[in-house]
Image 1 (cartoon, rainbow, N blue to C red):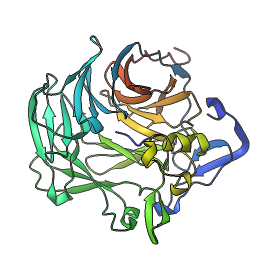
Image 2: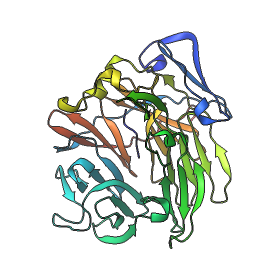
Image 3: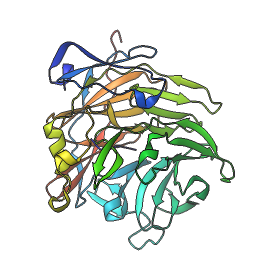
Image 4: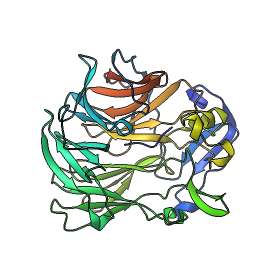
Length: 386
């Protein structure tokens, strides 16, 4: 589940006495980060600060699969394997690290999907959203088609995004942007529905995306700021919705009975968006369609995280932000209450794609495509006094 892209103890410099306070705003759009020249520390306004566990260095991924894909795929665990989806190649496949290859989901001649673009897992089933056939298909660990869920017209054609153990479906219903994009100032909704898709209940509201007013072709539009981040959510099997909140930098949970709880604020440096970050983004476009730097609405700072994943054991893994020039990326592992349990360190430019029971799936670009890497989750370091 993810949004695209140290100082202090993370390898850079910290400005003494300079801090960013992320408060709990009465109206979300009014809470905006302030510019910083260097990194600072995020201080939350909630129930307290999370203690910082020691860093644990992840081993290099020796199990690899090389692809010709141009973009990092989405992925979900499927027992001892992962299902990876490359939307720009219309590809969905199981990983086979023993043979360093990919196996097409449903077989090489499958006709169940055309243009897959989202994937999630629920218990032993992997669900694949396909805009070509306007439905989400369910697949067994052996690659058999076992379920099919159409898009829901009552939710403006939304695709299912999660499922709990009771069989309820969950959707994200985004606001209608309108001709000038101003509708995106509203919140997206997390909506729950029974298996029959006959009732729809709003479970939570997400923080509106960060917008900028821009002038193009004598018209004013509202466009999303690059690197602004977003709330990320999922559902545990018991029906509890978890939300990684980008402004509060903490985990929020909503029980099936509607009870809301927030975890402690997470300790993170704040990274200003700099020239190398902007160039990395611009260079991701083909040269013939590459925008100019001054044509893009940029965020001022990176969000505290760019991706979040629920592991099979219920823990939440947050892929933390880093500047383009930094060679170290950290992963925060949270328990169900949002408490920080582990800090894992990825050296290099690898990105976390999915979390399984025993392995992590990482991906990184190389000159000919994307390299997939499987890394065993290290045993947890003993705490002091053990």
